[in-house]
Image 1 (cartoon, rainbow, N blue to C red):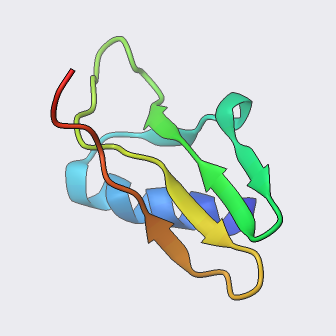
Image 2 (cartoon, one colour):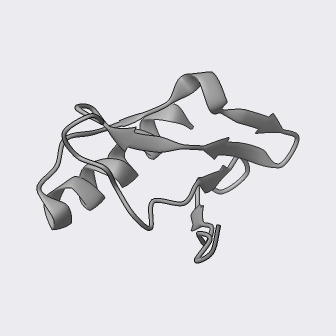
Length: 72
């Protein structure tokens, strides 16, 4: 599932032209799949907006992006 997550963020990287990485410290493992968080590799230089977590379903490998918070 981590391979699928990395492929997903590579697609996002192509769109925004910022090097990204999965933050393994915050991965949530559930019986139905894993929830991944990601950020810019150089997070002090590139602060991302709208980079909500996403889930990779363990039975199908489908990626389900979650929303992000508009407020504080």
